[in-house]
Image (cartoon, rainbow, N blue to C red):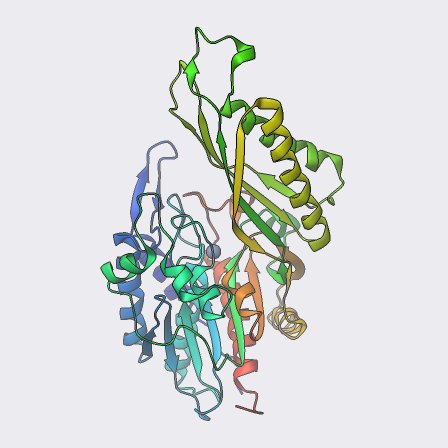
Length: 424
Ligand SMILES: [Zn+2]
């Protein structure tokens, strides 16, 4: 029986430290080290090489596809059966901690290491995967690699995405040596996909719960809004003759806050204008142009659609009022994605068996698992984070025990799927 297998918590935690030292930078204000492994940069490349080396050292067969996703396969007893896949990402936002994504990937490799130690071969093969550019910070589209693998985004569209400096995804993949030749489509989807991730929010920690049983991911909608007014002298241009793109952006930001306060889009709606870039961006010049981002989240698809329609109407209103031109484009859009009930039940059962408390939770962030949910039975395990679950920040922190608990539950769930027979 396999139920008594557990991972080595120290080894897992140490591997998080080791990967976290790659792309490390010192945050002077926080007096902490953070991680910067922005997708397809030199830091990401070094992280990728480190993890691939680890995969090979564990005896796994590594495949790299045409969008740079990396799959490491361990043989099963019934090796023709479709594998159980464990995955996440190792790219990061520019101001990250050590846990986001890495826990899922290194957790998968720790499971393989524990199976190797025990000399245990699962019935189905196991695959540990990391996907390209989950964060979307550099090329503007999150879950890029998993979305290409599952067919939501075409390879050519992904290749054509550019960063701020005009560098293309395809060229950057080639530059870092991760433009693979394997088919980017998971044409034979895995039997199941499971992912362990830090919650990136305060809920589990506040409730004192060990394990989050993730019910699904809320809808996400990103707009890039470009506002064009007229640059003018701040001292000589009368207020009534201005076309101030900065004011227009501020009004959109405030409108978002009013929409939330209205309650008309549900109590769980969230809206953020996280990037506001005025041009020319000088103290004594009315900004003639602003590029701003709008990030909307909602666990209810219908409410999300109403919110999108209303903010788009407001772009037109503000353009008229402020005598500016407002154009926008959708840079990301994913609907509510429910996770498999079967995965949820297994996560809860595994937690209970291990004497851990668990609670159902909706993911506030996007994850590769939501892409995989379109092609197979998929779900997630969340672990709590300290400091209100702060994430995308060097203070991001989950304890050794929190991490080990999550990966042990992931282990049980992966093994239960890996033991299933049935069609290949
Ligand atoms: Zn993540």
